[in-house]
Structures are given as C-alpha cells and as structure tokens.
Length: 571
Image (cartoon, rainbow, N blue to C red; front, side):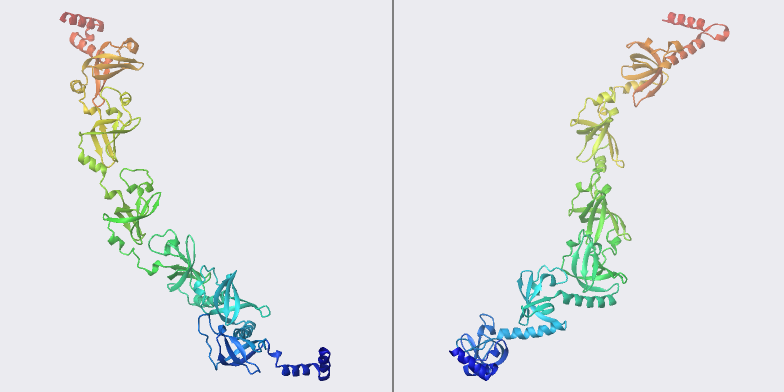
C-alpha cells in the first residue's frame, strides 16, 4: 500500500524532484557520498574529532588518522581540514568522514596529472613486499619492483628507505588502485646527463671521485657518475697486489686519476697509485749494493722469490742466490709467502724498476768456513751419504759433503775392489786433500790416513834401472809383474823379448822371476812400465863393448859366448 502511494507521488511530482524533496524531508543527501569536502573541527572526544562540514549533521573523524599510535593527534578545535565523505549518515545519525582518504584522493589527482605529463613525483620507500617495495607518494601507495630500484643490483636497500626521492610513474590504474613506479628510470636519465657533461670536460690527469662498480681478475670498474673507467690491478697501488679484491670492494668510494682517455671509444683508464708518491724515486740511493735489509716474501715463482723492502718496492731473489748448498730446489722449499727474511742488495736498475737480491749472501759461505776450520791434511769424520761409480760422498756438516775418489780409497787394492768394503750410512774418517771454494768442492782421501807402503820403494827405483820382477798375471797383451812386493808394473807384449818369435805372454808363468828394465815411473799411480827387450838389447851392447866388435871379424855369437864364459868364471 505504502509502495503504491510512493509510486503515485513520484509519478505526480516527477521522479527527480520527488527524490530531492524526500531527501530534504528525511535529512539525507546521498550526493555527498565519496566526495571531498572542507570542514572545521568543532571539538575532540576520546576517539573522534567532531567536524562541521556545513551539512545538517556534524561528521566525525577517527583521531588515529591525525598521527601514529602513541603520539598525540595533530589536530585541535578550529582547524580547517579537507575530508572524504564515506557515508552521509550512519545508523547513529552522523556523517562518517576520513582525512586519510581525502589526502589519497588529492594525491591520485596530482599523480594522474604527473603521469600524463611524464613528470617525476616524490615519494618515500617505507616497506618491503614480495618482488619489491612499497612507496608512499604523498598519501597514495605505489609498488616499486626490485629491478627498478637502481641501475645495478643493490644488496642493501636500507639506506634508501625513509628518504624522500624522485620516482617515475610507469603505470597507474585508479579503478584498481595500482601504481607502479621506477627509481632506475630517474637515475638513468640523470646518469645520461652527467655522462654527457663528464665526457665533454674529461682530460688526462684529472682527479675524480668515483665508486667501485665491479671487480674482475685484472682490475676494477669505477663509476665516475654516468661513465665507467677501468682501474687496472697494476695501477691500484705501488706495492704488489695479486687480486683487486685485496685492496677494493664493491661500493667503496675511491679517488682516482685519469691516466688515458680515448674520445673515440670513450675508454677511460684510471689510476690510484698515481696520486701517491713514487717509492722508486731515489731507490738507488736508499738501497746501495752490498747493503743488508729485512723484507717480506710477497710472491714465489719457479725462478725465485719476490721480497718487499717497503710498500711498493720489491726485489727478486733468484733461485741461484737463495742457498749455498741447495741446488735445483724449488724456491717454495726454501722460503714461504709472508715470511720475513734478511737479504743483501746485489744490483739496482732504477730505470727498469728492478732490484736483484741475495739470500745466501747474508749467510756465511759454508765452503769458506770449512776451509778456515780444516786445513789441508787435517782429518775429518762423517757418514757416507752416497756411493757413486767413481767414489764416496761423505757428509761433513748439515749442508756440505766431501768426495773420496775411488783412487783414494786404498793403496793396494783397485778402486772398484776397495769400494766394495763401504756402504751407505757407514761412518768413516778421511784426510782433507783439497778445498776449492769457488767450485764448492772438497776432496778427501781415506788411504792417505796411512803411509804409502810403496813410498820407500818408489824412492829407490829410477828410470833405466834393471830390477827383478815376479809375474802376477798373464794377459794377451802382456804380463803384470810385482817389484819389491809393493810396486806393480806391466810389460807389453812387444817388450817381452828381443826376438819377435819369443814375444809370447803364454811362455811366462805366474810366480816366475824375470829381469826387466824400467821404462817409466808413475809415482802418483805407483806403477812402472818395464821392458825385457830393452834389457836384452842393452846387455848385447855392453857385451860388444866389453868383449869385442863385430867389425874385427868376430861374430855376435862368439862375442856372447865369450861374455858368458867370462861371467861364469867370475861367478
């Protein structure tokens, strides 16, 4: 019934006029819903601010919209503020207002204008969400993707949060309440401007401030503000740096100098050490040859070790200058990286920035020390460290050895036989025969510990003398004999007889006595060279001289017969 009456009234007065009259009659104006109005604060309650917005009813706004929790609301009676009408009248008869939504509506209006005009907007990063961050754009919330935070990946965004900064709006949808912004677009635009300005004014020798952008094995790339330059590892510091990460880290502010600049390729070479004093200046005066210094081993190679004398100044200790005794040994077995060592300066080349150092020169030469402590002829004792085909090596100290040649093992036995009496690890005594410091050799002798049993016999025998020998061995090329039981001799096949038919070694027997003439004496080897043929020839000459001449008509047989008879008669 009531519905029919209302419809009849609506038809009579017209739909729109009647609805207006009804709203005025009932005190309701739905046209204000969702709009922004201006009001004056009338009074404050415990939870709300009562605001007069010029309507029949007063509105209310929650105090929490005027400040964060725990802080007194920033509002007082009499303040004029803009508010958003959420509902014209609730069930209590009041108008529900929102200050936050009013700010948001105003912000959306301003952001839409900025988006249409491709203008930057200011905002503050205040929170993290999945895939990015939330940004407050003066009341409107926007999404900042992680890829749009910076030009390069940022490990820590904490310094950027809570700081007002410009953003570029990429996309916005008011119906859905979505706004996507980019900080990277702003940086790229600014970077392009800075790059253009920097390139135009860039000159070699300029000193610039930058930030380490990336680190590689061969150097670091430095962001100079819109343009990157390469800082090579050799230009980071005067001292040796194996890897740039030893001195730099990503994000580190650095001051550099432009070493080279190619305007065509826009390649920039930078240097840090050029801003410091060159430690190689006057290095020849500071490190004269022959002086001793302490340094630290910085690098070890196959050919030696580098020693740092001071930051930026290194010298090379060649492997040949590392030890007096350790030959053909890798430098890493003599020194270690970071080890403190004493060295001697051998040579300085300032032009090539090279210093030759010696490690063994600061230590006493063990060969010189041995020569001073052990004179020729003195007796030493040591362990046999090695046995070779030509002799024995005897350890004389922890570092040096002496050699006993096989010929100096025994007076009586051959070297090969004498060596069979010794074994590795055996402790023996020997006499010092010679010390050659330059060649680093020490000659020893074991047989010299005793007197040479053939010394007396050698003193008596002379070249040309006739001696009696005892055959000790028969060989195809001659016979071996013994003289005075101590001297050895050899008679070659051609020297066994005057007659060629009698020059047969097999006609002699071991133990047989023969007379022979001494041809030569080798006193060092204690050996004699003998001849029977020479003795016979000499006897013939003596017989001819004593008993006659073949020219007088006597035959050689007659002369020899007479000589034999005379000798027998004398006997």
